[in-house]
Length: 264
Ligand code: GLN
Image 1 (cartoon, helix red, strand yellow):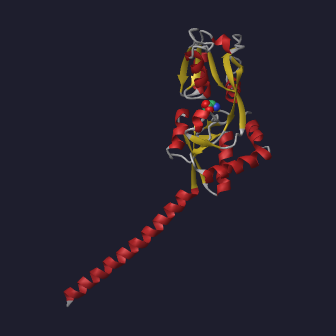
Image 2 (image 1 turned 135 degrees about the vertical axis):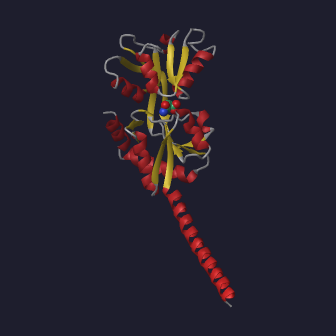
Image 3 (image 1 turned 180 degrees about the horizontal axis):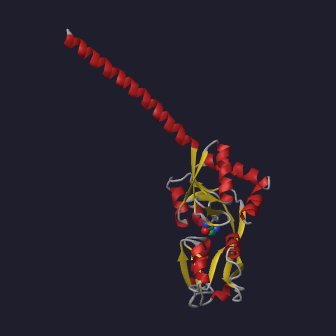
């Protein structure tokens, strides 16, 4: 009898444990689900002031301000990850991140890999040079060591110009030096290891501002471009929401305000 009772008790205990666990599991899972649903992940390259840069441990900048508004409108918590610029588009393409905001120029090649939001900033390529060694045209880059950020439109346009036979820099001795960070490229320029840096207008102006009186920048040719936010191809719902947020921010003059605040 005792034996039957203890077997019964054990059975009861197991049953209670199982139901208990079951309940816990359900609670845990639902918590995880809500957690996942509440987060939205953005990737960027925080070496591109005023659009994204580190302030201590934190990533801040124009794109981060925009992303916060995107997350707010979606009712989600924003997570920002810093990666190499050349990995930003692939990250969205493979679903590692929900969107990328990194001063990304909308180009036909990138449009084959990801979808882009409406344009939110207009830019143009600049050249940074040592004060007194002014560069006035693309032609004056002949024979120069040109620093660029790997995978950027600056990199692609200069490399194309050097490699294509009808490019003005073809066979001129001009050479591209690719950097992961434009800030490193600027350090090498100041140290005399390269002659110029080709980069987008506002980051060029920020880099010049942060390097006292050593360097200057000006427009290079007429390579103008528009920035867009990238999402995975076909992610219509997210793209529509991002576009709505961008339209609102543009109409409220917020993007100019963010640029002014982060260019101080
Ligand atoms: N606008 C440039 C591009 O898309 C540079 C962007 C960047 O370096 N963050 O290639």
